[in-house]
Length: 197
Ligand code: GAR
Image (tube, rainbow, N blue to C red; front, side, top):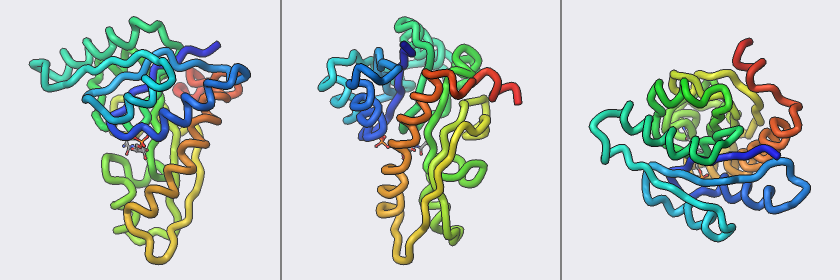
């Protein structure tokens, strides 16, 4: 059974999808803890499912590295097999990435390598693309530059705003996240091999 720690920063619809999937005894993974960089609304989903939470705010530390060390200590306390960033809106410092990768994955609301960073949906709209989507990738030391695991395309509709397009992407993201975690747990996806390629 794959043990997962999920990191979030916001409303947590992605972690909720994973919590709901993992509530099925047939699902091959369990969420052992949900962490955040702030007192995020999404932590309430974990509490509802009886999953422990932790918060490590970067503002309480003298450096990004010190924050990363404390975050990794909290994560490793749960001895997870996999760490999932699901709407975690902080760039992890290199020491944290080195401690956790390649078993450290992220969901991103665009078809990477297009539109990395915190404003992917806004930037896709501004660029006038006709399709964008969602990506699961391994986290490396860059900003959304790690090896792509899986992607799903979402069409941009006439009249889309950042909010309407992001909502449609998030529907796809939730399914992609659950499927990707299932495939990792069943060894249909090998993160070590992907990270080497
Ligand atoms: C998701 O769309 C996720 O891809 C995005 O934040 C949203 C979180 O939604 N992450 C990034 O943009 C990371 N660069 P949620 O809090 O409802 O899961």
